[in-house]
Length: 505
Image 1 (cartoon, rainbow, N blue to C red):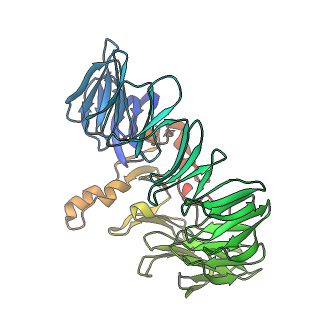
Image 2: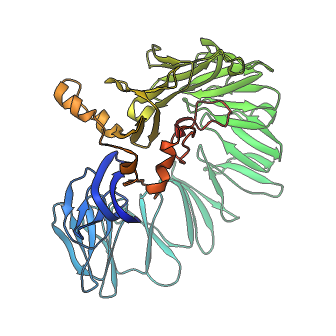
Image 3: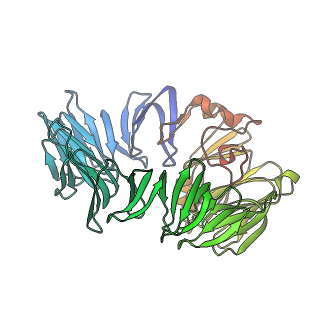
């Protein structure tokens, strides 16, 4: 929950939803579900949902999660309502809403926990918590800090637990008064550790302190390696074992030493590919732990693509997951999850470069001697033209804005400056726009706000992270010589420059 108080009435926008909240707002509270409780210049109040619909009038809303909200009554009690205004709990001492939809109620000195369907889970306890994945509920029934761990159906997983750690719902360790046990429920194994607080790793492995360094085990008690500082088990089954501060050994899943003196590792994010470096060469291993590429310099570009450069060379070749050359003379590249890619072809030092955006079929959709910024989530991009003008384009709807002086993306909003006119576009609305209804399409592709410099000062942009762009924060939009760094946006593609990319104007 974030509360904002304005010095003068503001037109408020929610950057996360890409929607206008309301006009003439002097005070607003942004909740976790993107609803807002607003006080207006005429002293009226309303609770507005994430789509801009009014849920309730003048009510003292103190919390909103999912489709429920909590109201503080005049007598200090609290009531729980759903979006339709139905009372779910009325005039209790305290209510807390959890992101998983569960509800905590405190009344007459008794604590109760209800599931997301409001069926009673448990009543009468001292403290409660959830595991990070919300698969288990942890309860203490007295001041002594021993936990009972419940499954969501109400059955007990374990009792008298002093401490716990869950890597997954089926792979965890529990500490009791007399022992610490590592559980692998999938394999139905329990391993009792002599030493407390084992470190759980990927691949149903864990490490504990040994007589000389740390030992690596499987959950059935099989010791894999020993004597190293620390272990990292990779998704493809390979194991990195740290020798000292500067070096690691790489083993395959059969515990055969593949490589010594490893200095760095990168998880590629494509299948289970892994990229390693020994300070001299880089090595790419596939999901079977097999070496498939050795190069002077090999960087991941996303989507299973790699940029290979020879030592002392600024330009390289773009390779796909099969190590096939896709493009030559590439300075940097970024491949997005949807298969689109942004390339910088040529050397920026001699000013002979081309920025190129390609779709998932490899077709070029935009080129420029200047930068292109792509917003994958909302399928939009803007291009810097030779004359230092900007155009905003959408994957389905084509060019939406042309000949702009400045464009910047911020979450689900696009800000545009054209001369003395300033506009705010909703990227959410743009993506909801039908392509077969030209009249509706035209309406939804219009800015959700436009005005002059003086009117821009009366706008506020709210964000889920609690950031608010108030009056002075958007002055950079009007500075012709400024890059407009406002602390948000998207970095430029994979080069190591200091450019703020989509942050700037």
